[in-house]
Image 1: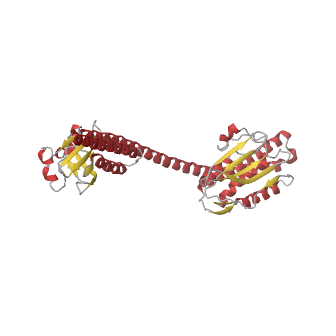
Image 2: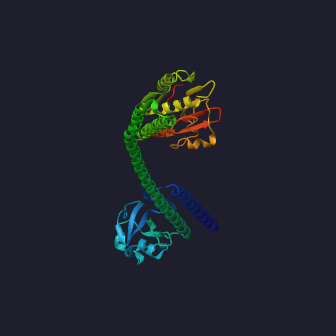
Image 3: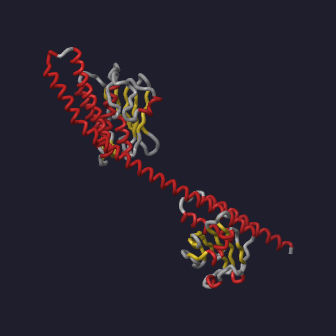
Amino acid sequence: MESEERIAEVITLRRILRAQARVVTAVQELSLVRSLPAIQEVVRRAARDIAGADGATFILRDGNKCHYADEDAISPLWKGQRFPMETCISGWVMLNAKPATIPDIYADPRIPADAYRPTFVKSLTMVPIRLHQPIGAIGCYWARPYTATPEEVVLLQALAHTTSVAMENVQVFTELEQRVAQRTTQLEALNREMEAFSYSVSHDLRAPLRAISGFAELLEGEIGPAVSAKGRRYLEAMQQGATQMGSLIADLLKMAQAARQELRRTEVDLAEIAREVAARLREDQPERAVELIIPERLPVSGDRTLLLVVLDNLLSNAWKYTGKTAQPRIELGWENGPPGESNFFVRDNGVGFELAKADKLFTPFTRLHTAYEFPGTGVGLSTVQRIIHRHGGRIWATAEVGRGATFHFTCDGAEPAG
């Protein structure tokens, strides 16, 4: 007799251990879910396994009604239906904020027997989801007379507590997603407005700027040799200011167009584009002997017009900042990056800059060298960054004062020749 009791105890213990392990698995699964349907799927399967039941149901409180949202059972129960809180056992569990264990549903006055007659249910256990102001319930059903053990009720209640936390996390996650989406929409609208404003202002400023420059030339021709040295300096300052403003407006238009222009991807050879830019640079300054290293081919998937702007800016900057270097050298190439990523680069041996200031390079109108040292508007690299981002890539710089700079960039879809 003792041997039989011992075997029964071992069997019971093993069942409890399996149920505990199943709760742990459910907790791990619930920690990863991001939607209410996913929570329901985890819970209905776990509840049935924990209690060894013939069916399990997931109920949500919907105002003054119980919504039988999901179920996992040997035959259909009430999935999708709603019942008044006062007429069903799940409502009693939520209103009283405590579990209910019913060995015989037809002997308990809390059970609407007529509703259960078409089903397989003979016994049940129900636990509330959250003890403080319950938001739902988890039910387990048996097709035979059965009394859930205290251990099973405790484990089901533990599952219900974890379910409550998971539901709150999903609510928070959903709200955060909505806020991020709303914020993203607002930022996109603001960017479009700023780009349109930049384009409009830049375009509209061209006419009065041409007028200033033109009238300055007419004034110089009208006065001629009679102009004083001070007056000539004034005229020269007007012309220089107009030229600088014209460059700034042109760069602003390029930056606005880089954001507005439709991206048309084709196979593009960066090496071919670089040779075009290099030819223009040599034509503009034929007196400079700059060593330009460009690979035979450097294919990439991208928009040729926009990538031309990228290389024109990067190579022109390298050309400019090697202007005071004894043996200037500029190289376009690529190097292996993380798996699936190729890093292109434009490297020079010019004046370089302090690496600590690299984060300022891509901010519009920010320059690391004065206009007296090297002319420029501080807009070009901002335009380059926008174009690279539109291609799904990123751009960054490394440098050392007096030893040159390297601009690295990636481009989604790059397939450089080996």
